Image (cartoon, rainbow, N blue to C red; front, top):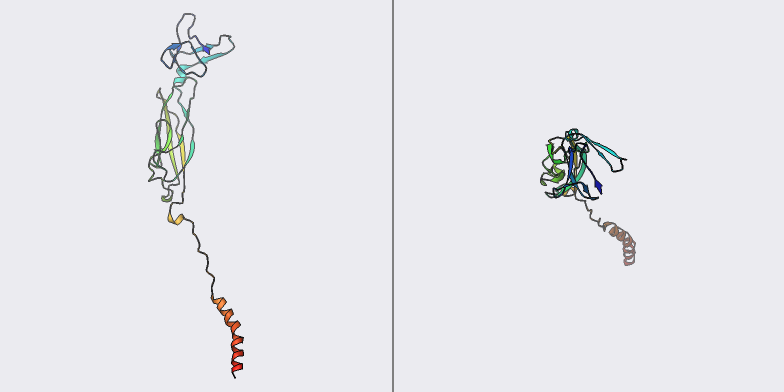
Length: 205
């Protein structure tokens, strides 16, 4: 458990913590979450023992945009609408940066795939998601925004479309077993029977 005090010698309050119930608290349990609010001025957090010192710079942190990295995914052609094929993640460029509010697609090479506000990469149009029609990959340019209105640098999301053997021309060719010709056997029988026929004629003379 951590316990923090955000006042100076004059008892001016620079920051405070609210738990999930919206109550101002001075400590939180390990694993619990809380929101740190501040008055905008820089302040320091000092541990009880004085061994650790953290300098908070909320004003500059609030102006730091989130970061979204390029990402690559793959999906089979004709996958059903609404299928989630991956999720984007945004990181914070500063310790006290504002929370990310949404992801926005600013350009896309196809309507088959899109990105939701929460960062899910989803199939939007399975009829267009057709490898055989020439759609082998899709590129989307995405940004993330935070609560302070900061916008990240754009990230490129690349989705590779996997081909399926769903066309008649893509089906494997099954060769029928070749039938053995009987002409060769008949020829041998004819040759074998010829001497007997010749001997019969000689006896009849």
